[in-house]
Image 1 (cartoon, rainbow, N blue to C red):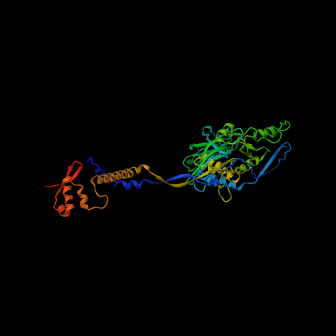
Image 2 (image 1 turned 135 degrees about the vertical axis):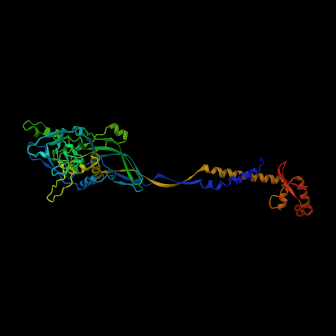
Image 3 (image 1 turned 60 degrees about the vertical axis):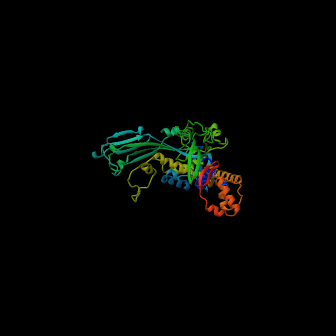
Length: 485
């Protein structure tokens, strides 16, 4: 088996794997590569907003000589965005984007936004029980749950299905109440508290004295968010890397000198008025001093870290604040909610409190409102940020490892051919076409070859070959045919 002829057998076996290996040499894969022509890839953002639907006029009382009244037309697009946010999940509230390939990325960018925050304040609820002799005994005593300036009251034995039973109550927070107001006091748009009865009261399962009651506090405030955004297969994903909500200390000051006037009552003093009205950037009364625009402070170190230009301002004008605030005017005052009809046709108009009462997550609902408002503002009054798009490209890949077997087979085949040619030359065979029997003669032993050669010279090779019987035996140079005597 050590003879070189074995190479031919080995090559024959390797040829069985030759074609399958060649079929796997080239494979098709898909890759996402940056495409050319990215100028059309944009996403909406906002920096300093100065749009307004308001006009101002001097406030009449003489001792308020620096105050102005803000009269604002309702921005119907903004109002529509507000209601749309109540009926959508957060996944449906995405900013305006242009990405023709469905796969785009944007470098991190800051944008002026409305942020929200909610906290559970059930532990702060105070339960007050009061006997009311004017009410028949079956209703029991009056039980009130209250916190801050909002309270929810029902008679002890009432169930929610009875007329005049109240299921929830809500009220905006006063200047000096509420932890969230204090936390976001210099960029606050609205803050309110809500008390809700459990659904078992509405459904008549529990009486008022048995019903679980919860309370929440929520705030809407202006902020700047740093976004990381990408779109994959048409689905936009936003991630907030960093958020800032502190006001620049030099912004939103009254543009006139505010002095302490001892000749007017305390609550009518302009200096005190200015102090109180800097808690809320927006005052639903619509009376305020003319102020410089509010600017959100971003620390210099953060600007350098995230590549935000030092001279770029983020904020909004006083008129813009009142335009946004106008949207909430009818929904964030004092309100209570029950199933009693209100209108003459016995209908019950849907209120903000009703949405909150039926919401499985007040925090998520308020978050949707904040997001919906500024998704609209970024499109209507903001600017854009340019990104890059990626295309799905089919690539041909050569699997070089699978070429090993075919290359090895070819090299062995070439080696076998060379060995055959050398052996043929050594045996003295004619290099091209010869008589087959003459060729076979060179595979016999020396004695048989001599007999066949002599017969060939004498001209009776065919007769001699047909009368000769041989057998295969090992010889000095490998296997050979020997004549049987």
